[in-house]
Each structure stands twice: as structure tokens, then as C-alpha cells.
Image (cartoon, helix red, strand yellow):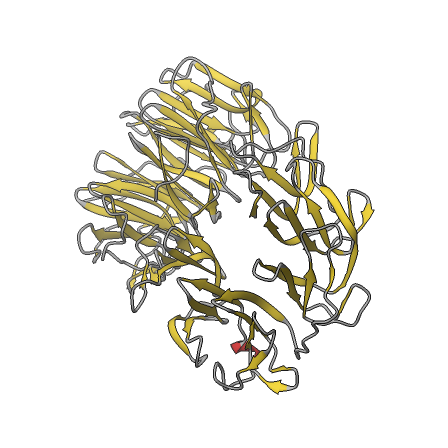
Length: 621
């Protein structure tokens, strides 16, 4: 993604974007108002991997062989004086191999192109070339400049009066220069640095990215982040331990590092040593599937490995509500957690784990809400538990288990929280129960893939009262796709079939009268819903645009409708992401979202974001 110079962005990659009759391949333009520019006429027949904008010039590179039907192999120059109507410039540059990136140097008006290519513009030029007058129609390969590097170049940056070049090479112009070299912009002379940066020639120590900040040079290797002395070229390691570490950008005063699981850390390099973390929460190695507000904290549960800047948290964590920082509460579940509740001052968590903090806990664990210590739970399940609710002093559990407290209970059952005595209630659903949801104070809902429960026919959806009796069937669900949330007054269901009619989304009142619904729409993924104090929040797991009411909604986007008598999507508020985004907790002034994203409204966020209800839907945390 690169700025278009007009307040918008060109977003590129390997995708097909559709909005109504408009279709784009591998590149789109996001205008300053955050809408997609459907007047852009620019299509590549292959992946666009890198792009750079300077002035009114856009260069893009990738695995394509044509742009707008004209032959262009690997690299193309476009004039974007009119950003919606780019104009192809000059003749074709034929690139034999991959371009990793481009760097424009304004001091000499040169464009440096680097990568793993072995030919360029019909010549046997490898790994690093530069273009003269790249801002004109006559941009051309600079044949008077031809450094010889032994292998791939991964990044190029300017620091002061020097151009620093990093990669997998070990020699430059025949001299030893392991993974790093520099060139004087004044003289064009290269300085081979030998083993100053690295004494090992193993490719696992090769430079993956370079970054300049405040006149300092920073580099990442496979699992390290270092500051490099620009005179001696000796690195000082600032952080290590995460595979795939790479500088991915800059936000305010922070350098953003990425890894194998997205955005992993932010660094404030102006402090020595650099200060890490504390800028926004991130979830790595999986995702949070449940967030519950508990007093002054949020409790996170899911299938993650780390949270907030590399701090190890295995599937359970707590975050301070005011500061957004991780607390010391750190029980560790050895597998995923699906649901959490608070009962009688303690935390009960359920999932697919067999131990918590080294203590045997069969899919159910009871935790001290202050220090996270494991307490006797009086509940054990023979198999995974997907949901738990408190029904008075009874813990109602559902999942795919075959027993509770060494007694036969198939997929649903109830246990006394205090005594551990198994209740006689045995609804025996015919297949897995995926979700339990409270519906006001006197009812709860079970959803899943069952078609029989408590001896009666129910397709994926059933309502029980507080006496554990099955309520009459009013709404039929779908065996696989139903998502449900409710409060005392509203019940929202998504799925392929809702209420016996083809619908994707429907809202009912507490008496199960239909308030509003949407017609069936093809191409949707799973719709997630969350009922808040004043709004109902909706998101879709598909990349494709769809329609809610009369409003077109992009894929991977969270939107809201006020509670009321009709579906009325607020077009001024949305949280757009680059992957699945799910509303996990709705507060009076904010909604907490999780998912597999690393961007929300073009701001770096990895797996978690706090989106205020005031504003346009952009995250604050």
C-alpha cells in the first residue's frame, strides 16, 4: 500500500476486487474519504508485489506480464497526475526475476530497483540497478552504474550522504561485504565492510529489511532487530526471538516490526535503549475468540500464544481497561479456550484444554480473578466444552463432550457450581453445540449442528428457560452457519435460513416477533453479530462486498445499526480490515474486535482493536 499523493492510497497484491459492476485485479485506489475509487482503470494480469510513488510518478512491480492489456513484464512506470486515470509511461522494462523493492533518491533523481532478478531490460544485470530520470517519459537503465553483488538485495535506504544496501550477498565488486554495504551519494563509490556487520555467511543471518529513523540505521535479520553504527557498521541487537522479524513501517514516533504472525512490536528508538510496547495491544499466534469486561479489566480468551509485544500468554490474558496494558494475571491453558464467565468472584473458563498452569483441568478451569491461581472447579468434562453460562447456582455447559464429572452426559449438561453435583437435566443434543447465549434474565439459547435436542426436533437453534425446559419452536436455524447474540430485548441471528425464510440476518424482540431481516445474499461468509447498549454490530468474514438494507458494505468490515424498528446501517461509521474482523464485546462507548487482521481503517492493529462509537470507526487502541 502506498500513498497516492492526494490523501488516498493505492492498495496492491494478489486479489480480485468487486463492487457492483466494477472489477479490479491486483490493485485498487482508496480515496481520501476511504471509499474505493471505482473509476480507476488499472488492471494487472499478475501479482503486484511492490510499489512506490514520488511526485506524480507511480512505479509498480510484480509477476505480471501486462498492464491494461499492454506488454509490461515485472515493472511499469505510470503518470498519476490524474490519480484515477494513470497513464503508462515509456517503453517496457523486462525483468527476469523478482523485484523486492524500489528506492527513490531525490538528491540524484535516481530510482534504485533491487531484488533477486538476474536480468533487467534485456541485459544480464543482477540484484541491483538504477534508473536515470525516473520522473520522465524517457526513464532508462543507468548503464554507467553497474555494481556486482553476489546475491539478492532485500532493502535499500538513505542515511545522511550514503546509500545503505542490505541483503543475502557476501561480496560487492569482488570484495567481502557480508549482507551489508554502503555507497557514497556524492562519489558513487562503494565501501565494502567485510565482516563488520556479520562474521557468519549463513543466509539465516542475512538482512531482511533496513530502516532509517532520526539519522540512525536499523536492520532486521531472521529473528533480530538491531541498530547499526553507520561508521563502524557494527550492529547492536535491540530485540530478538521472533521468526520473520521485519520492519513494516512507521507510525507516529514508532518503528513497527512485523513477524510470522503479523504486527508484533513497536519501538521508540529515540530512547536508549529503545522502549518497546505499550502503544497498542496485539494478539499473535492465533486469535482471541472471547473478550469479557470484568470490572476494570478485559479478560481475553482464545487460541493465542502471545499478546501485547511478545509477552507470553497461552490462551488466557487480562488487560487493564484504563491503560490498555497487559496485567500480571497470567494463567496458562495448554489448548484453546472457547468461553469465560465470572461466578461468585471467580473466573470459569472452558475449552479444549486438559491443564491450566500445570494443573489437570479437564476442559473446565476455575481461576482466582485477582492472581490467576487455579482453584478446584468441581467440574470436569470428557471432551471439549464450547460454552458455559450461569443459571442460578448451576453451571450449564455445552460442547462435544461425552461426560461430566465421570457421568454420562452427551454434549450438554448442568453441574452445581458449589457442590459439583451433576443435575439430572440431560437434553442429549444429536450433534455438537457450538454456542450458549443468555437471552435476558430468564432464558438461554443453544446453537450448533444438532437437529434433535431434549427429545424434540430443533435445527441448530433451541431456547431453554431457567427451569431448563425447552421453549416452543418459533425460529429455525441452520445446521452450520448460525451466529447468535442477545440481550434482554433483542435477539440477532445470522445464517442461511432464519425463521424458515431465506435470510442472512434477522432481529427479533424478546417475544420472538420479527423486527427486521435482510434477504439472502450470495457470496457471503459467516456473519458475526454483537448486541450492544444502543447498537447492533455486524461483520462478514468474506472479502466480497454485500448489501445490508440499502447500504453496500465491503467485506472484512464491521458496521452498526441502531437498535430500533428497522435495519439502518450507519454509513458514517465502519471499521474496515484486511482480514476477518469479529465484534467480541460491545460497551457503552466502544466495541472490542478480534480476528486475523493486521490493519483496521489502514492503521496497524494485529488481532485486536478498540473501536470507539464516536468518530468514523477508526481504532484508538
